[in-house]
Length: 161
Image (cartoon, rainbow, N blue to C red; front, side):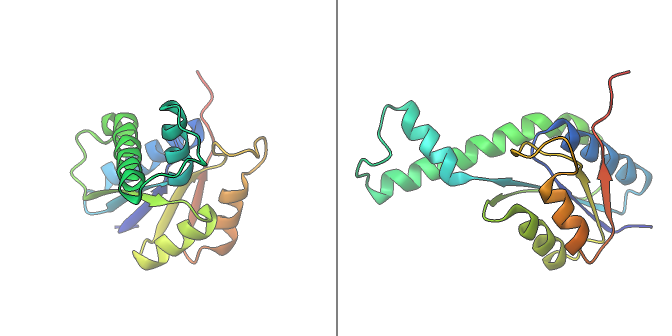
């Protein structure tokens, strides 16, 4: 076993899909390797969007019960969307697979911290995500590459063939 615990930060971008495909390739070659897919979500933004769809102003006074309900719904919807995107790629894997959503604070730091706390020995991630900076190595992947204590495999978006 070359790697025992592989982390894949996933944001839905083409680059992240290519990274997940590469991590799955590693996992298929070694059924003993665990795969950890982590999506960092901006739950605050998801709740704001949910309120706006309902026609509520974000400055409206809302009960904490209602806010918690929206928060839970937003996380459930994000989780379902994530599984719709990745489950097909994971089909047939015999590996231990963990899929987690993390509330966004600082994505680069969260990825490095998660890898440390969960004893990941490889991080496989896309070169560019869905953030505002595009065109060069993304700021998040660049941060992880500099700060991670484990190998980081940066995967480019695959060109259509």
